[in-house]
Amino acid sequence: NIISFLFTVPMVIYAELPVLKTEWDHAVDEHGFNAVVMNIALSGFFFYIYNEFAFAFTASVGAVTSSVLNTAKRVIIIVVSAILFSEPMTKNTVTGSAIAITGTFAYSLASKLGGKKSAAKKKTS
Image 1 (tube, one colour):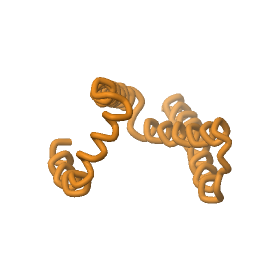
Image 2 (image 1 turned 180 degrees about the vertical axis):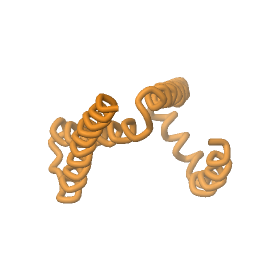
Image 3 (image 1 turned 135 degrees about the horizontal axis):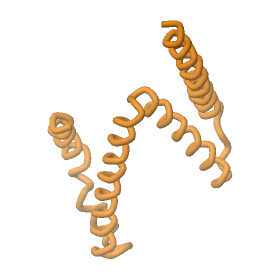
């Protein structure tokens, strides 16, 4: 994480520094200094908490299961957002969601079948 941080910071500085003051002033004018700082602090805090839970969950269930569930979560968010905000789903969105849902379902079936086979092998041993 430190290495990625060290490589990312120069890119962000290069890309964002020219507009940083303008955007900061615009945000402060529109929302106030305290609100902007509070939103930045809360965003960082909740992202940290999210990462803590994600690492704990991954340690508990395994990396593959966590990855599959994360993919399913993203598909659910895309579909629910499209419904709530009345946005039409493009062909690419539908295709990507269908692939993710199919993959999640296939993994679920494979996990169940794999668990039954390993349980059967243990009984015969």
